[in-house]
Image 1: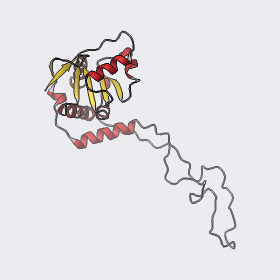
Image 2: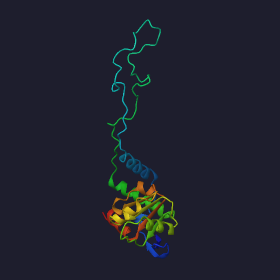
Image 3: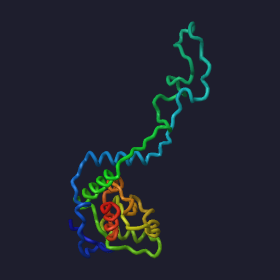
Length: 210
């Protein structure tokens, strides 16, 4: 699969061939869904916690006697039926949301997500970008030249680049990720994926040449 290479000005300067084993694979919707759900579950903080009737302070005394008052019988003011009482079936912090997915499945899901972006012309390749200092204005200008201003964009760089990271993080809906950390969830969460030219080789090395 051939894609156009752009420079910082948004001009077409050439073409490159994307490896079909990564960017042109058949979609398996069930597998992709399973991997994405597991990744979302693994990112959960899991600290939400509600108190049941035994954990709410107070309520140890029977509010009124069992018989003779004409009112309904109750044993505690912390019953889930009462205002201020415990919660039934609420979120509990001890619940484990982690899901284990085999590495081959995660890799296959990533290839499917990238292939879908490539087929929909939502995958672009940028020649290079050199920043001597953090400059958000420069990144915003590049995205504007690529007609991606204001859109959800995932930038993929070959290695950690602090100047690039600091330049990107103040732009809404724009995120930077190292090629070795690429995953299906982040790819699908963005409308467009922009690869720096050298990051494609890194993706091949990290995920395909295993």
